[in-house]
Structure formats: structure tokens, C-alpha cells
Image (cartoon, rainbow, N blue to C red; front, side, top):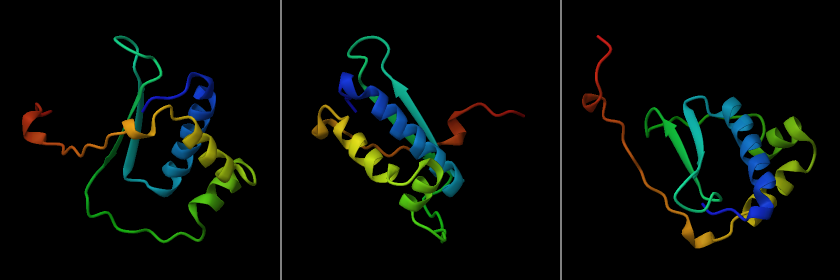
Length: 111
């Protein structure tokens, strides 16, 4: 993802809040966000989302993601965060999704 230099703080805030709500709602998922440090624009980010299995069970909640976000960070923050998040992208067509699978056999064991 390429982020507009003037929108970095909004991008960071939105990702922080997404992570806080996701940690409470999706326990078997892990998010990592990396920023390019050398070899190109420092406004390029890569996000990895890891999970244990594809067949994740759908968990029922007593509220929506938006309500959880607004409860945690204040009324209306969900809508503002979503708008800020999308407005922070410099190039919407430059986003790529790749699916990777962890293969434990290629890593050394801890035996």
C-alpha cells in the first residue's frame, strides 16, 4: 500500500484502532504492518494477516464492528476512521493480496 505523506498519522491511527478491536473480536488472527525503510518510498506499507486455519468458525457478537469501535474510541470514530483510511491511500489500484500457507516441515523443529 502506498500512503500519502500528508495522511500518515491518519493511516497509523486507523490501523492501531483496527488492531485493538480485532484483538478482542478475532482471537486466532495476527496482524503485522511493515513500513519500507530502504530501497524506495518510505510511504509503502505491507500488511500481513495470519491465522490458524481457513475454516474459521463465525463468532456471533452482541454488536457490530462499528459499534465496538465507537464504544472503544468514541461515537462516530468508526465512520471517520474508515473515511480517513481510504483517503490515506495514494494509489488504490496498487494493492495486492497474496495467500501464503505455513509449511512447518521446512522449518527446524524445537526438539
